[in-house]
Amino acid sequence: MSVQFMRTGQQGILVWDEASDYKFGIDLFLSDMDGRQLKNVVNAQDLTDVSLIFGTHDHIDHIDRDAWKEIAAVNPQVKFVAPKFFENDLPKDLGINNERFIFVDEEISADEGEVHIEAIPAAHEFLDTSQDGLHPYLMYVITFKNVKICHMGDTCIYEGVYQKLREKGHFDVMFPPINGRDARRLREDCIGNMTYQEAADLVGAMKPSLAVPGHYDMFAFNSADPKDFIDYVEIKYPGQKVQMYEVGKTFTL
Image 1 (tube, rainbow, N blue to C red):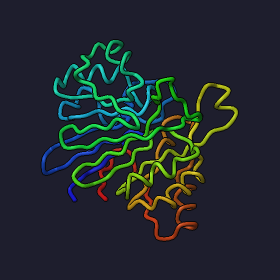
Image 2: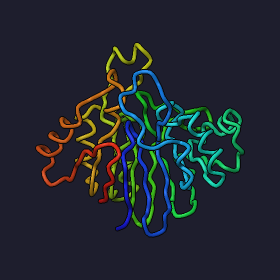
Image 3: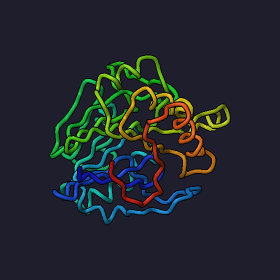
Image 4: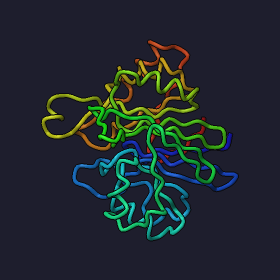
């Protein structure tokens, strides 16, 4: 396999294929912001070679609106993948033509360039659903060069999510958030995710070829120790491959 990955911090991932130069980014958080602990390893102005930018939900560390505007300006060919929940607002708010967006949801998949895109609802603390059945928080299942990627965005465990994931088949790589949740953060409007124990159990049940934790390194107030996740998977699910990767380092499966 020639598919390459690079973590950019929080839940940000760059994915590309060396043979074809096809590249896309998921949940890239590129804007300066008080409290961020990591410097950018990529800049919006440099992303002239990406074909797709994915955002799992409309929070700045997942859909970085300012960065999306910059990327759209320097890269006239790039398209943006987002939850259909935001179809009526996002293009207008960003000043980007509707034709440059691909909107998906649980029953709305898409094929674009070299990727097949599917979505699973995410419960970012709560499993929010609009009256017309759309979801503001999504996980993406992306098939690229016969590699199946499950990027979980921000989510907690909810009833039925294991089955929804199993229905998508075997994942070559999963990117679960592990930063957890608590009353202090929720009181401060910082909605939460799986704990590292919940993420470990999910990975143990799904058995991906590789699991890579995320959403633990950007903000001190919303963090976790990835080593706890790694240790728990290794002791509870021996044989399950799991690895944390330094931001900016390239890795393959």
